[in-house]
Picture 1: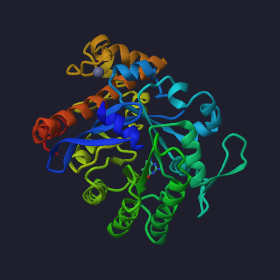
Picture 2: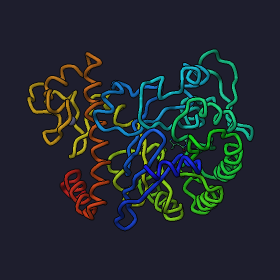
Picture 3: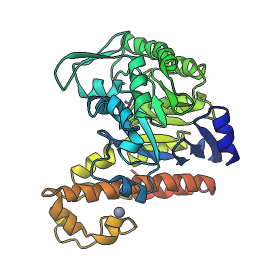
Picture 4: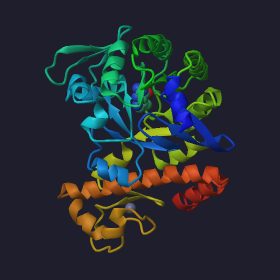
Length: 381
Ligand code: PRF
Ligand code: ZN
């Protein structure tokens, strides 16, 4: 309580307290304006102000602490002005816990192949009326200030890790130039935390330049961007390891767009704290469940008369109440099939985050990781 009063007094919108460590892994308490979160932390992705297939009540029920919204989608519809008029996104979607919004540029570049990045910002064709539009760093922050999330992201210049050459360097330096425009435009630093995003492709020199550029700005938290775009696991883990080693110990580190359960375990061992990914809900819509052994394809005909739950070791509402046979029957025919699978998959990811947190606190992180890997890769492959 006293800490909260001090935070208000000094205009801090975030507190990050490391509660336990195991080598580079950390378990922390991340206090945000709307919720006190535990890290490592998985953030489900909601695009249009909803996590596809789940109500906000169900998200609370499965222990979700923070969800991600996309500035790009929300700005198009219902528009940030309307969200602002209706009292902010928390109120609009009836979500009392924490929210994070991404800046929008990455979504444009990945969704609209017509997007073009210049020094001014990201230009794109409006999917609503086809008119050319420009998203500048200032505008991204202004929109995110209206939406009102606990954490907002800087507009960054994202390039695929699979390309090489001068474009990577340009994107790195531009991301650093844009952070100053974002900081200048941010009008609610006492209520919303602006995170910077490290770019630099797979080049360790550029990554280092970007980390130092952002750390000099003393932001409340940092993200590692530009990954999960088709690079090898080895390159991906090397970049994460390098960035976590040089980012400040006392601030949260967020690996954007990651990932699979294995990636979250590995990145947490490397000292990362936060993750977001559409994978659990997207793969659910294709009939796939996440289980300790890997994945379970509910569309497979072997499921048709299987009376076991999706995962006999899972204590979620779906596994307590429904059989594989029932979900197999629903999965291609009714939205309820993917809703039940999304529920289970998000439960699995959130439980994994909680297990990472508690195993670090209890000093049993290596045992937890060993068991996780042995269950997922029993033959040692
Ligand atoms: N930047 C932003 N959002 C992102 C990413 C990024 O690099 C990624 C990783 N490719 C996912 N989401 N702004
Ligand atoms: Zn379950």
